[in-house]
Image 1 (cartoon, rainbow, N blue to C red):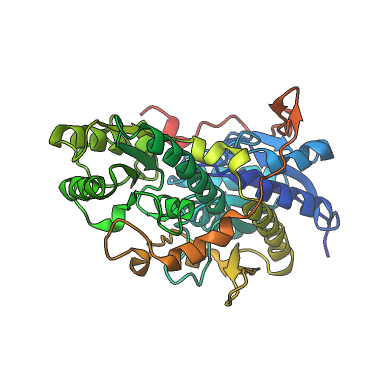
Image 2 (cartoon, rainbow, N blue to C red; image 1 turned 90 degrees about the vertical axis):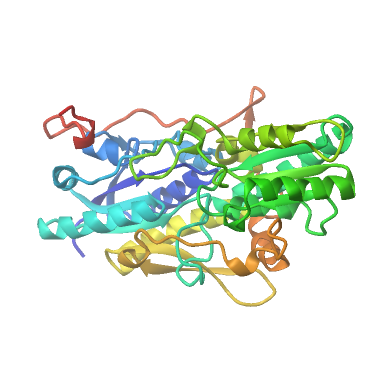
Length: 429
């Protein structure tokens, strides 16, 4: 075995409530294996920080602050980005930075686009003579990483916490609607999830016995805005009130969409929301009850609230980070750590690996079999799949002077060894 080699960890894309526990899992496991790993760096704001040679020294951080990453949500600890590596000189720069800082291990936390990036960096590094072990760590609240058969990965860290958020949020919303229905009989709630329905589907976890007047409109439902209004009015005639959970990607026409560097629609940055169009449409065509429709858009609160995090999700995020380090040591480059569910009535998972080239740019679809025949609900099979992921307890979040105590990493950076660099996409022509 050769001398220890340095480590770079980076994050990409939207954050999650548990992303920092995967980061913690990688850091603590690397620290426990000094025979393999030297200094551990974090790319500040993901791949952008690597391009700019902004490497946060994670080895220099206090152990207590690293432990507090468990209850530190979103990406504020080391940052993330949505920068797409598409230019050859950007890829070459990443390899140059890794060479300059004697980096032998690269852990990339992210979704399908991130796995593609990690795979391409790994290939180029080897072409340029750098012995680099690149390992992916899964993250996405949408649960869209992998395959519809759930053979590559059962679920992604981050999803269980957002599913729990929606289970509890809809319970609270039902209390609001149950008291306010004489004047506000319809409450429309918009869920994140871009093109896939796992997040809005989680609303059913609030009411598995279907006692609430709850309608769930996935993007995959195939319904039109007119049909949506008909279903809402049918519910009003039957129950007098209605809670609508709708995907942010439900087709309602032009919303003045804006896209990120990967071509993904950024719904919360677009000119209009699906929730507002639906509320306006319902009020214009008229409700089958006295009063008006109202709406709420929780927004990024779904992915940055640690108090709603699932304890199951927290544990699995940590263990998949640990597994990534084990893969890097035992199996070498080109894999992503993965979570697979064992068959049977008792929930149990195991941690394995999948080649980066297989999972890169993979995109799971919401199973058609999990959409109820009504197209306004999900099936009990989905509930059985998702229920274990949200856990049975509240996370323990320390308070300091009445406020949540998050990790406070010191701004200690590696000394820069290369000329300054501006990412290619940010330069003027």
